[in-house]
Length: 80
Image (cartoon, one colour):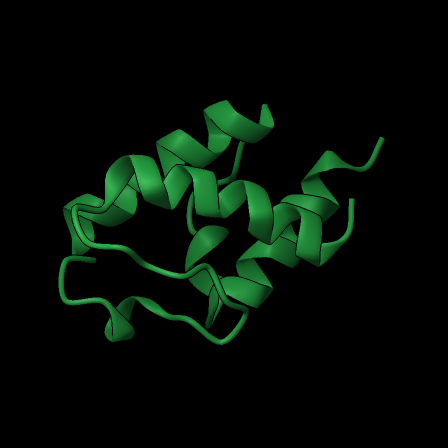
């Protein structure tokens, strides 16, 4: 799965979690979204794991500096 495909699916997750519209762009980070705090981060990771049927190791998600890197991590986890 390519980054653009992952970002499209992430947009669906964002639409279901955030109250305000947040565009899932590669350069987006938590610092860009007022509503995105530590509790929201946990909710997002759980929703992403369910949506993509992947599991992340402790600390793995925190290495991503922006949504593009997170999308690449998701794509990597989906590889057979």
